[in-house]
Length: 331
Image (cartoon, rainbow, N blue to C red; front, top):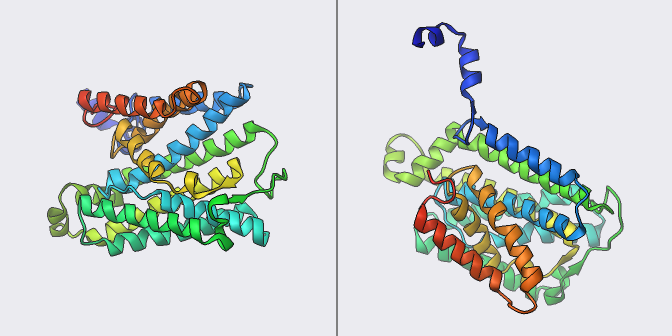
C-alpha cells in the first residue's frame, strides 16, 4: 500500500489529501462544502420574511466572528472592542453615501481601510500590553468611538443616528428582494471564510500561531511578533469594517446604541469561543448555533422576558466550555 502511494504522482497525492470529511487546517472538507450547499439552498428557498431576516443576520455575524477570530483566535489578541471597527466601517460608508453621494460599493472599501488603520494603530499602541491589559485597551478604544459617535452629531447624527433613504437600486446597494440581501451576506461570509482558510494554512498563519503559543520561541525562530500582531489586527479590522457597512445597508439606520455597544463586542468574541477559537470553522459553527435561536427567542419572548436570549446564550456557552474547552468542534 505504501509503495502504491509512493508511486503516484505528487500532484495526485496532494489533491486527494486535501479533501477530508471534517474540517482541517489547510484543507477543504466535505463538511464545509455540504454546509455551503445548505446555505445556498436556504437562500434560494422562498421562506417567510422573518426567517430570511434571521438568515441574513446570522450570515453577517458569522462573517464578523470569523474576522474577530483572525486576531483573537489566530494570534491571541483577545479584543472586546471590535465594535469600534464595525462602527467605523458602517458610519464611513453611510456618511459618504448619504451626504456626499458616494456609492456604498466604494464607501465600503474606504470604511474598511479606515477600520484597518484603526486596528493597526491599536495593535501598535498596545504592543507592550498582554492579557487583561490589552482587553481593557480595546474596550477603551470602543468606548472612545461610541462617545464620539454620540457627541459628534454634525457628522454621525448623535443619538438619533443616520437614516439611509431606502431607494432601491444596485448603485445604492439597496434591494427590494430579501433574497438578494441574503445572497450578498452569504457572499461576504464565504469570502471571509476563504480568507480565513488561506491565512490558516499559510506561512503567515503559522507565524500567528507561533506568536500566540510562545512569543519568545517565535522570536528566536525569526518571527517578528509586533508585525505579526499588527497585520493580524489590521486584517481582522478590515473585514469587520466590511461587515459593519453591510449591516448598515441592510438595516438602513445607524445609531451608537446598536452599532458600537460593548454588548456587540462581547458577542463578536463569544461566537468564536463557542464554536472553537483558532479554527476557521469554529466561528461559523458558533454563529449558526446561537444566532438563529437568539433571534427567535428575542422575537417570541422579548416582549415578556427581555434578555432571555442572552441568558440562554450564556448558559449554552458555559455548558459547551465545560464539556469541551475548545468549543463545539471538541478538538
